[in-house]
Amino acid sequence: MIRVASYNMRKAIGTDRRRLPARTIDVLREIGADVVALQEADRRFGARLSAIPHYLLDDQSDLRAVDFGVRPDGMGWHGNAILVRKSVEVIDRAVIHIPTLEPRGAVRADLRVRGQHIRVVGMHLDLSGLRRRRQARAIIAHLESLDGTLPTVLMGDLNEWSPEGGCLRDFADHYGFVPCGRSFHARRPVVALDRIMVSPDVTVEACGVHRSPAARLASDHLPIWATVEPQ
Image (cartoon, rainbow, N blue to C red; front, side, top):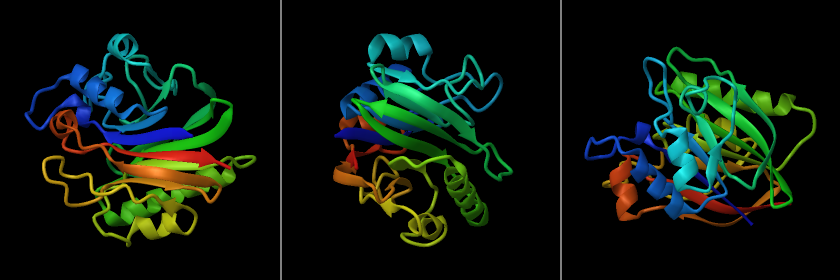
């Protein structure tokens, strides 16, 4: 089994408006995932430094960031990052360019986790419904353009308030949605903005929303998780 998770970490700024990267790492340790898709992992302005210093992640967790070769002091691409356990082998990785007017993006990593191959996509989609649908189609097209297929997990903050419309319809033509639950707002979750989707060759054994006291304080989104088995 492989445990995956998605977390909009809000640049390590909690609902108390304090930026505490160590608190975000505490939440990541609680989740105990093999692979984590992060959103808002880098600061938005200036040098766009990683919101979690690399040395802190290395010293206080068993996770490391997949290197997409974008910025040496950042963690990902337009705030999207993929963390993996230090024992996980990264076979291939790429940034995914999507149509946008604001800093949005997606990232992909092909991984070997305890001998099992899996493809993971992390994303943070637009606030505009029309652009979200275009972005979803761009991500699907990117995956379809790759040589060969792998069991695939897509995760991220889709910013889709509709329970089944908008970009969800585009993804649903190709992937199944994992019923993790409502993740936003962390203090009182009312909507499932954060989603995990899987290809037909991935079995989902368990899933949920991580609702610890630390998670309710560390970001305005709660992390979501799933235990999956590639076929």
